[in-house]
View: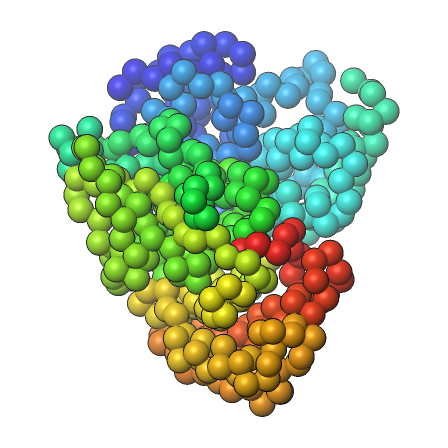
Length: 157
Length: 289
């Protein structure tokens, strides 16, 4: 079936199998490989994207449910010429090891800081509870959130 | 549309169904996206009851239904932020797993399930709707519209045991609602039987113990400790748990007693201290249940 959705500000279409997930459409049809395919059951958060502004696991959204809706992926946040403050903070804090969970965490952190500019630690832990990282032990990810929060509040780009 | 295509499987948040599709466990001939039906995404108070649309996501319940403390507490324990933005009470009902976090709350509220089909609506008490593990009384041509329950005055709580604070399928859960008007204590158990269960005998004994102590009329009157212990034993005895990967039957029964004792203790403390006072129980927004 033909699905049309606004992806990162641009209307895109894809011809997908009716049972396909939004994640499959993004990665395999639209070549947006930022959202990662890992658990396929909403456990790991590696495929976190925004659907109409809400943080969701793309693997649990039917592609057809994104019809006429707005999807934002990690690709919308920054690129090699200019990183998003959350991405910069991850680099600075060393919050990346294998990197597989990173796009999902970047999206989840950007979502959190968009709603709560100065979250306390328990709020951060709660907000990131749906994103699994098997390398870092999370300490540096929490450091990155603090750096990003301070920088965003200071109005840095 | 559902009546025309009874084989169509409704999908809302997809947090259960998409897993089955992704893992090739299920290949429905048709999917019916109900996530855009605005009637299912609303909740409203009507005539001393509240109707909660099947499509209200858990994050919206946490944000908007603060007066319903046990429901909010249960909703906060569902999955993760991503899951709560999508998952719905309608999904808990439709899947019918005894581990669905909202189900013990609906059982303790004595809720009814509202079902619709072309031109007709019927309501079914939760007990008749949840008939077995992942089995419900829904007909193929029906959709779950929501749940409705009587708004009661009095404290209540939901608590759940699992290996971490997020993304947990309950090993056991307990919802307790103390109904000041009917002078009832209602306790429902999740994940410890083929469906959600009520601990009816323990409920009756506990309500009777409050009568004997004169505590219904005077919230300051304490309940004798042995009545609290009897309640905990009674609730544990009402569980019908099995051994599985998440926990043993014996552990689940043990947990039910502990959670029940805590829940009744919190409820009685709530009555004693009145709204807005500190107490060691779980966070709560309002006294209404």
